[in-house]
Length: 86
Image (cartoon, rainbow, N blue to C red; front, side, top):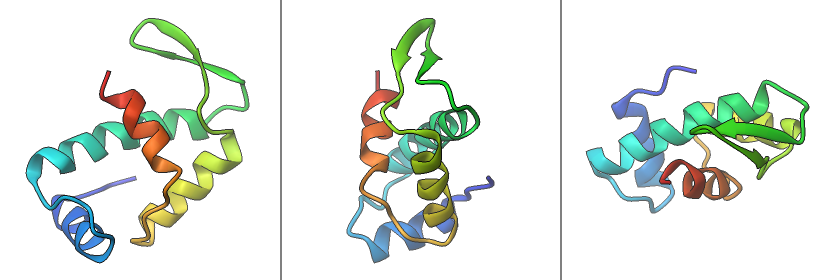
């Protein structure tokens, strides 16, 4: 999924998110992780060399991706963002 800075700013403004470049980079990192979660049915995944339980199931992750692609923020994405910060 291509997620430009412009697209993020629109999403952020419409959903009371931080409208900064730093926040955009965090979301972009989270999207990479979210795509990994959406691509497999396994209950675990590897993140920075550590095997972890998935915070979202495959279908949940796919739904969050669809919503973000449509410009709608899904609160379940915050579970992924918290992991991407570590």
